[in-house]
Image (cartoon, rainbow, N blue to C red; front, side):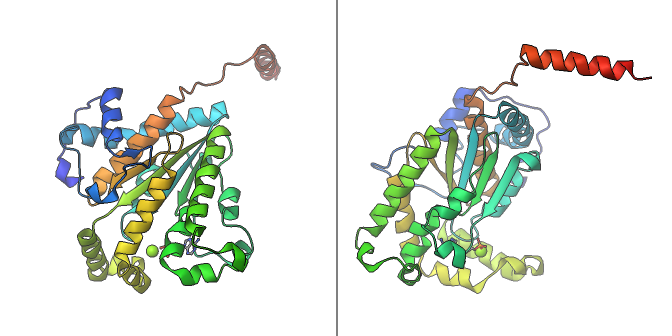
Length: 308
Ligand code: AMP
Ligand code: MG
C-alpha cells in the first residue's frame, strides 16, 4: 500500500478497464497456458495507475459488502473461491483483507489441512463437498481439493497412505484426478455455484525474503514452520504440478486467476476485483416483494400500530 502514496480523491474505473486488467491474469483454457511465462512481480502498470489501484483497493471492500448482501437476499447463486499457493504467498492475508468488510454471517472460510482418519476413509472430493457454500453464500477454500494433485503429487508417500485399492493406482492417476476435479467444478457451475480459483504466484526470491522476515521478527515466528522450508526444496516439482493442474482445469465456468504475489497490495487488488466482477455480472437485485408478502407487511404494521 505504501508504494501507492496517499490519494484522497476517488476514481471510478470503467468496467471495461477492470475486465482488461483481470483478463491479463484470468485463464479460461488450458491449451497454451505456461506458468513459466507469468511474472510474479507484475503490477500491470500500463493498465492501471497507482491512484486507480489505490482507489479500487479502498473501495473494494464496501462494494463487495453491498454485493454480498444482495447475493444473500436473492438466495439463488453460491460463490466458491478457491485459494491455492505455495507457502508465504499471502493466502491468509489476502482472504482477511478482501473479506474484511463482508458480513461474516454470509461467508464461510474452510482451511484444508492434512486429512484426518475420517477424511482418509472417503474419496478425495468428500471433504470439499461437505464444505461447499449454500445458495446465497460465499465459500472460501483456503487450500482445497487441489492439494490432491499438488502436495500429494509431489510426495508419493502421501498417496501410499490413502489406502486406495492397488489396481486403481496407475500412471494415469493424476490425469484421472484432474478430470474428476474439472467435472466436479463443471457440475457445481451448472448447479448455480460461481467457481473462482486463485493461484497466488510467488517468486522463489520473494519467498526467501518472506521466510527470513518471519525469522527476523518475533511477532511472525508463529507463521514459520520448518516443514515450509522443506517444501521449498521441491520448488520445481510444485511449479510443474501447478502448471498441470491449472492447464487441466481452467474453464470459462471455473476460471483460474494466476495472481502475481510478489506485491501484496496487487494480489489483494486482483482478487477483490475478480470477486466484484463475478458478482456484478450476476446482476443481483433485491427480490421484489410479491402480493402476499406485501399484505403480510401491511398486516404487521397494522398490528404494531394498534398496540396500546
Ligand atoms: P497450512 O495451510 O500452513 O495450515 O498447512 C496445511 C498443510 O496441510 C499444508 O502443508 C498442506 O499441504 C497440507 N494438506 C492440505 N490438504 C492436504 C491433502 N489433501 N493431502 C495432504 N496434505 C494436505
Ligand atoms: Mg503453512
